[in-house]
Length: 489
Ligand code: NAD
Image 1 (spheres, rainbow, N blue to C red):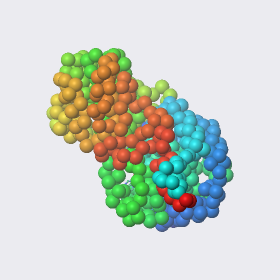
Image 2 (cartoon, rainbow, N blue to C red; image 1 turned 135 degrees about the vertical axis):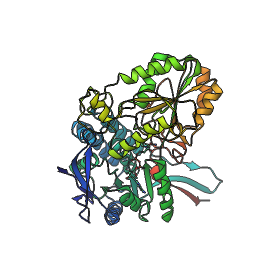
Image 3 (cartoon, protein in one colour; image 1 turned 60 degrees about the vertical axis):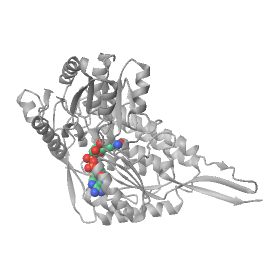
Image 4 (tube, rainbow, N blue to C red; image 1 turned 180 degrees about the vertical axis):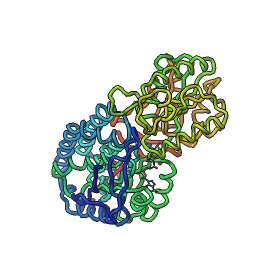
């Protein structure tokens, strides 16, 4: 069994308690490696190392051009490591290799380069107050920051957020999800190779209730970027009151994907299917898990969507031809199975899917165990059902009919979440009208899940706290503004 170690102060070390956690390959259900089960004392040592790195000036003392050059060297190294890192990531969380290797890691390298450019272009402003006063603003690093990562996209979140925090001049303590830590611990090797200051980036592996909670309550950390569930976000907010931490919360979703009768239905079938099922079995915060369809095309559309879903190749995520991989871990597999049962109990009509690993193997699938659910579509007529309202985080869509544009908008907005929404129509005026009224941080028209580092990303309502990752202000999320007034008259 392989072993991965914490990365603290530039050193590799086990948890101070000596405790370990097993990490499981979700395509087989077998443990393949162990990672440190760290605790509050490890977090404390990492925060001290980060503070020392920040205070030393080895990073903050560089010019923005020097910092940017170092970040670009890191981006090149990330790109060159795509093959090796993607295999660790896919093994650990089951996201198909064709995405981790060919999309996510190359994309992360591009994003690091974009952030390096922002570091070089950081600007304050002068403000005309009155004669005799010279007033200006400047942006300053927070100091020691932290990043808490979910298991569904460890490396992309790690690269994007660490790069933004470093570009802003901070030091950082990172806590990966205990179900998918190995790839991040591996990726820290690049900091040694490139000679980043020890302690500038630290990674502490362990459970959320221990390492995550200790980070949320640590008085030495000024800022946390958290990506994960709304429930955990709420707990972090409460703990963060200890020193009034600055928080960037990117939380859950139950996003609507609306199909109007005038849409290009071929494109809509493919786009809606990719929005929820592929490549990583609906485990995307922005998954289009509520499919709202004009009643006049409802039956036809569901039939076509079901046929498309049933044609998706479910299998080994290491195989480049696989369309959809497994659920990333056993606990989430159990959660998805419980929603399959709930859907039936709530009277939803199962249109396609609903099978788990055992049933798929019985039906002749070559799976070797693991945590699989095939693409599942429920038809429902009630948006108040729990399967219509709660984030399932698996390859399970619910489809609801609507009778008017007004009703589509009402249904779309009728959940506590507001992360993303999609709509499919050929009518440009309708596209603008509906987009304006959707309460979501990201809206896609005639496409879905299209993301870019230059475009802000964040959630409305209980999907986030209004901050935005990505985009031209991404560095400001990791900095404190300072207003200066000088009397010069
Ligand atoms: P989670 O909230 O269970 O865990 C996320 C991270 O928080 C993990 O590292 C976990 O160990 C840690 N954590 C758990 N309890 C903690 C506590 N009490 N204090 C501090 N940290 C704690 O989420 P998950 O199950 O890993 O990921 C799935 C969720 O993440 C879904 O809700 C999904 O929508 C959301 N997500 C959101 C985005 C976004 O950008 N909005 C992106 C990806 C995932």
